[in-house]
Image (cartoon, rainbow, N blue to C red; front, side, top):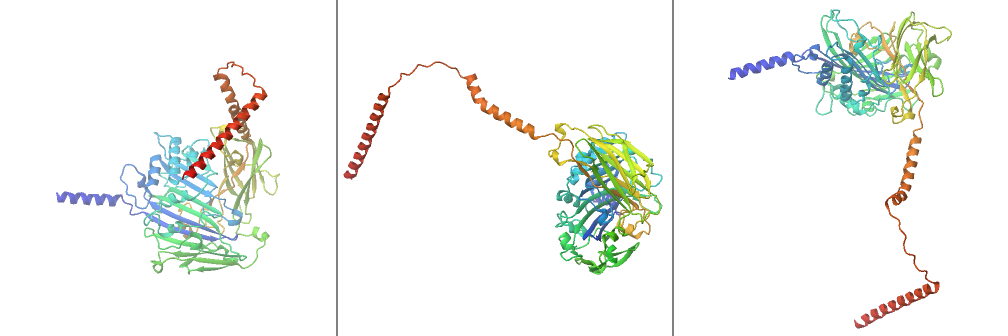
Length: 602
C-alpha cells in the first residue's frame, strides 16, 4: 500500500515537472528618456516567454509565470495573437520624438484568430472583447459589433514570427480591429493589469519594477499615460524550427519634470512613482534600467548612482543599471537625475534638428455648417533623413454617420498643392447606415511630405441614437500610418524580432518598423433641441395637474338645488352681535369671580 502511494506521488511529481514551464523566461525593463520639452519619458516593460503548448486544450497545464486568465481567454476563443492598449492623452511627436510603441487616444484592440470550422470569427471576436474588457475593467464590449469593428486588408499584419512550414496565406477575414477614442483610463484599469505580473509578495505589494506602480502619485496626472498588452509567437532558436509564446505588458508615461528654475529639470524615483525599488524580482532573469542620454550634447546631466555600464545605439549613449548585479542585491535602489541646458537653441534650429522624428502625422477637420465636412491629414517627413522613397500605409476607420465620398480623395505634396500623387493601391469599403463603418487604406510611395484629404456628409441620427451628452460631439478615431524607416535616427524602436528592449539594444540592426497615430477628431453632428420635449412635457404635466381637480369634480359629483335661506335684516344681525358680546363679558366676569373666591378660600 505504501509502495503504491509512493509510486503515485512520484508519478504526480513527474507530471508536474513535465507540465511546468521550466523554460519560462520573465524580464523586467525600464526605459527612461529625458525630453527637450522639459518632460521625461518612462517606459516600463514586462516580458514573459513560455512554451506555446500552454494554449493546448488536450493537456494539463501548470502556470508558473504566465497568467492563467490570459491563457484561458486566448484558448477558449481561438486567438492567435492580440494587442490591446488603453491610452490617456496624445503623444506629441514634434516635441517628444518617437515613442518605443505608439498608441492612439482611448482604447485600441485587434486580434488574429485561428481558423475554426465550428465557430465563426464574429462570435469569437464578441466573446473575446467581452472577456478582455471584463479582465481590464474597460468598456471593450462596445467594439464587438461590425458597427465599430473592421478587418483591414494591409494594416495590422501579424506580429508573430513563425517558421515557413507554419506560415500560411494571410486572410484578413481572421482579423478584427476596433478603437474607442472616448475610453477613459484610470486606476480601475491599472489594478487588474498589475495583478497579471508574476512578482507578487502578498496582496498588492509587488517586487521588482512592478513595486513602483503601487502608489505612483504622478501616474494619472501625467501628460501621457498608456497601458498595453501584446501576445504573439516568436522563434525559439536561430533556425526558427521551434516557437515560443511571448506576452509583453508595457506602461508608458510622460511626466513634466521641469522646475521653477529655467532650463533645469530634476526628478527622483520617489517623486515620480512614490517609492524606490526595494528589491529585485526573484523570478525575473533580467531587471535592467536604461537611461537614454540623447540630450547629452546640449544638456549637462547629473545622475546618481553610477551606472553599471554604457552602450551606444547609433550616436546616442545609453547608461544601464543591472539590478541583478551582486553589489545591488539586498539594497534599495535609489535613483535621482537633474540636468540643465547648456546653450539656447532657437526654434529654427530646433525644426531642422536631427532630433526630430523621421515621420509625423497631424490631422484636422475641415468644412463648416451642420451637413458637410472633411478631413485633412498632414504626413511630414524629415527630408534630411530621406534619401529614397518610402512606402506609407495609411488606414482610416470612420463611423457610418460620417458618409465619406471617395471621389473627393486627394493626395498632394505639402509644399505645392498643385502636385498630386497617385496612390499605389486603394482599398475602400463603404459603410452602411447602422451596420458597418467606412474603411479606407492607401499605399503611397513618396519622398516628400504629403497631405491626404477627403470630404464627408454628416448623417441625421434618430433621437434615441444620441449619447447622453449629444452636444459634446462625436469622435472620429485616429488615422494610422505604418511604414519602414530607412534609418532609425537616434530613437529606440521596438523590434519585431523581440519586444524585449535588451535584445533590441544589443542588435546592431533593426527592421525600422513604426506605426504612427494622428489625433482623434471631435465633430458636431446635426443635433436636435432636446430641451424642447422637456419643456413640452413640463407644460403638459402642469396643465393636466391644474385641470385635473375641476374635471374630476365635474365628472364624479352630482349637482342639486338647495333651499334658499331667508334674508336676515341688518338690525337683527346687530342685535345678535350685541347679545354675543354681553354673554362673553358675563362669562369672563364669572370666571374671574370664581378665581378670586378660590384664592380667598386657600
